[in-house]
Length: 130
Image (cartoon, rainbow, N blue to C red):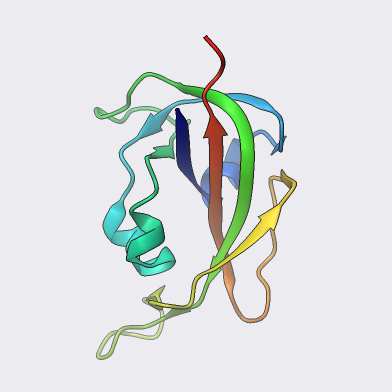
C-alpha cells in the first residue's frame, strides 16, 4: 500500500530530519487539513493526501507511525496575499498558485522561488514489505 504524506515546512525547519528517495522512514501522522491543502494544492491533488506528518506530538488524533520507503518528494510553493477587506499583514494561500517541484532529497531549509513561498513537502511512501 502506498501512502502520500504532507509535511509542513515549519515541521521540517524546526527539527525535521533530512531524507531522500529510497530512504526508509517512520513518521507520526495526523489527519491532513484538507481545507488548507485544497487552497494550496487544488482539490484534485489535496484529495490524494492520506496523512500529515506531526512530530511535535500532543495531538489527540495522532495515530500509529507510518512507515515506508520514500518513492517521491515534491517541494510545494505557493503565493500568499491578504483576503479582500483584511489587513495586509494577514496573508492566505492564493488558490491556484501552488506548484510542485520534484526533488531527490528534502533538506531542512528550502527557499522560496519566483515570488512563491515554500510551504511544505508532498512525500510518497511505499509500504515496507511484509
